[in-house]
Length: 422
Image 1 (cartoon, rainbow, N blue to C red):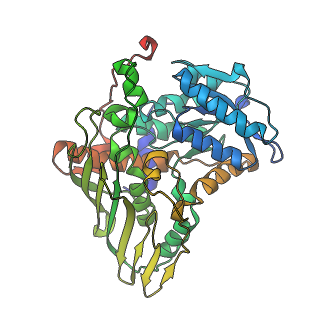
Image 2 (image 1 turned 30 degrees about the horizontal axis):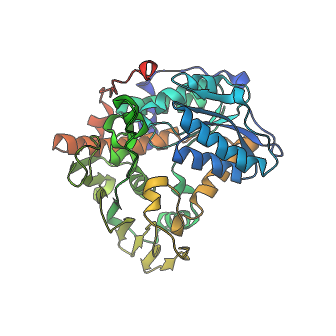
């Protein structure tokens, strides 16, 4: 199924929303975009801080389920922004609890919203924010199940031309990766025959929260929770699989996979500790993929493609380039004392990804100030669906096709009532 058909079919199967155009804001290039942060954890704070660092955005609103997270974020942004001459965040623009996302979406003080809540809630939160006329930076993954991903595609179609909707695949804006993929698309590898990729990461160590209820622990440590996160292949490994789709200009047609919890502590939730996948792409191109989220003493994230004219390699750290008939290598950017494991926890990094966040946020801001709005809902959903296909193959123990995946009606249920959270 080609991309246009994929987007059309997906949109036809999802529900519709209405955008109130009068609330869609285009901000002049010489005034700061007013940003709201929905989900004040580590990654959300990093995303919003990167937007402030562009020099053309300021955080004016915060929303989270938990008061302590909101307070920490408020202290952080007040300090950062007051140093730049901005005022402190007004108390009226801080929202806590299960309705916080709706209050953020309705705020007239906000132009754009960073959504960095647990992925399970992304479609619901995206729908509210877009309906409120806000530009959106949506962290990956767009959803944890197929119906959720299809809903995001539909929301994207409704938003087309009215506002910017970016998805958090910052590597697609990272200079060495952009240069590499451009060369591959221009034929530097010749005909690609196969590929290999891996996301070999260590354990993400989270607090125990001894005084929290079981539900609160799930929400605070959602990376350990299969339903809230989508499992590691959808939540973390998606970066690598998105790059494979980018390089090959398509999604995989089918996948076979294995995986399990071996390597993880017994009491840390229900996500897998490892995956091993074979993705079958069009034109008989197979890509093998493996991942861990427990490895000690080892960390590596890489994609390699093997063609008739050469081989490419694109690690997060280490030599990135093409070897063969048309050799090329990106300059190295690893800083002394850099800690590779930091990326698996916080998402920020040096090395080949040093400028990824900066360029991604700069492009998002410029899309708003220029009026040349982005719409990455379909691409973000396509990569999430690719990961879901592999996840299903691992869970069921048999090969799963793209067509089977797209027909899935299974809606994942967290069985969490946020209104009853103490």
